[in-house]
Length: 430
Ligand SMILES: Cc1cc2nc3c(=O)[nH]c(=O)nc-3n(C[C@H](O)[C@H](O)[C@H](O)COP(=O)(O)OP(=O)(O)OC[C@H]3O[C@@H](n4cnc5c(N)ncnc54)[C@H](O)[C@@H]3O)c2cc1C
Image 1 (spheres, rainbow, N blue to C red):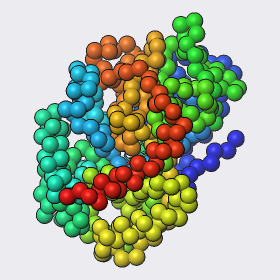
Image 2 (image 1 turned 90 degrees about the horizontal axis):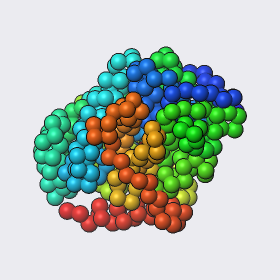
Image 3 (image 1 turned 45 degrees about the vertical axis):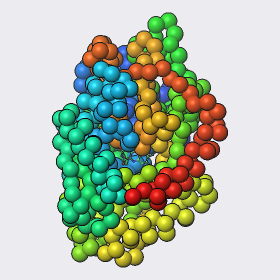
Image 4 (image 1 turned 30 degrees about the vertical axis):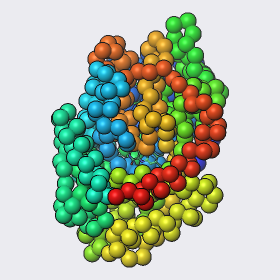
């Protein structure tokens, strides 16, 4: 069974991943991980570093889901909520989660260095410029809040932000120097290789049909085999319902999988490139309809956007995002895109992620809200600590019960229309 990859820049430029077998027959192990994105691969890698026998079961290939299709921005924050809001919601567990989040970018870059993974990783920092003068207050609040938890953050005034971005479009903002960017598919494939080298097995092209806790063990069932284990980490995130409706419907239905489009420009000439984000930081701003971009390793700007109506999306986005880039950086001149692709983001109605203990030694999460490249790698470490028996009072995992969204099918159809609301708000803001 061959796997079809999205027509992404990353699929075009990344070396192939390791050759992996399909699951055939019945296997017993200590920990089974379902899903080989950043969450599952990081969990497996940390488990193997602790000497725990581990098996990964992946429906397609490592990195096939959001992990291999994203913008590659390594950002140690949630998309909307800051430490004060996280702690107000989750108390002490929230505080420990804030610490995981604060360290998440460094956890990712350290893992890349420790395992010598070729992932075009650049820990050049992350910038969040503000798109209205009024939004400087948000930047000030974030710097104060994250700064009080020891994050390497800094407030940036308008003149400095103009120099950092090479654009007049923003009014200042803030930075976190631990962030940066990666080639996400190279990272996923490199992590898969590191998982194999560490002694785990990864079965690919083997969709889990269902997962059960039976006679004190977790059993993962695929078309041609089973994996039985003491512990389970379900790391299927926004793709949970993609291959089997029976897998974990309560988790599949607590997020709205929302299409996010990514696009890579043609390589930009050196004379112009040097004037655009010369420090090569990752950048995503404060628009409700997010403006974001980063350089790749071959002189392309990787950016993206969304359209509310699901019709000819790629064709409609090309001129729209080209015009946006030209407005932000007039020095670019004519812009065209060599690669346009999409993937599912798991959105929750309140923009908080959901973390779950599914039963004895069973864990899952969903709800990245478009920002969890760093977090998913960091959560893998936390899940591996949970599987090893670390008490809940020491984990940065604020567990809640799965709460499916009522009328999920309708919510899924209506959610893209929220974009119109964000645009309207963005246009009115001062
Ligand atoms: C287009 C896009 C752009 C994004 N940009 C950014 C960004 O720049 N910065 C940022 O911080 N975040 C970004 N995100 C979010 C980030 O990519 C995700 O939060 C992160 O990759 C989630 O990783 P994961 O391992 O939890 O899930 P995934 O990477 O989605 O992994 C889930 C895996 O489970 C597998 N699976 C599903 N069902 C089954 C089954 N039945 N059996 C076995 N396996 C199964 C899938 O095939 C998949 O490989 C973006 C997301 C998208 C979609």
